[in-house]
Image (tube, rainbow, N blue to C red; front, side, top):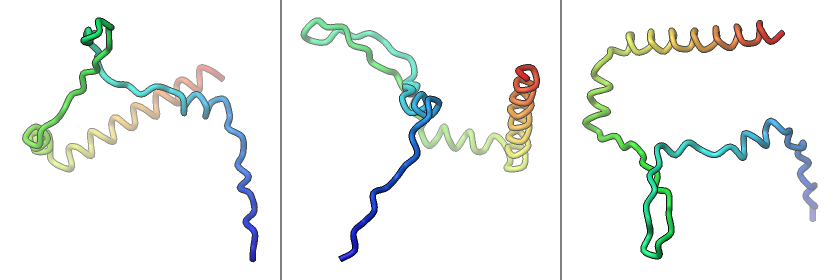
Length: 88
């Protein structure tokens, strides 16, 4: 019978550990008192209905949405390039 070799993974870097342990954005929170008198945080999340999503989808044509995406992507990469240029 063939034995399986142990999996050898590379160690996690500090940057990866911070990314893994970073808390997710839960939205706005409100404090609520539970029946035992303790203060708890309740996170408010925004929920979308299908009607709202249909309105958003119908607001722009596919070409206009793609154009806006390209412009936003260009601004993002330009800001990253500028930040790296000033850091170097």
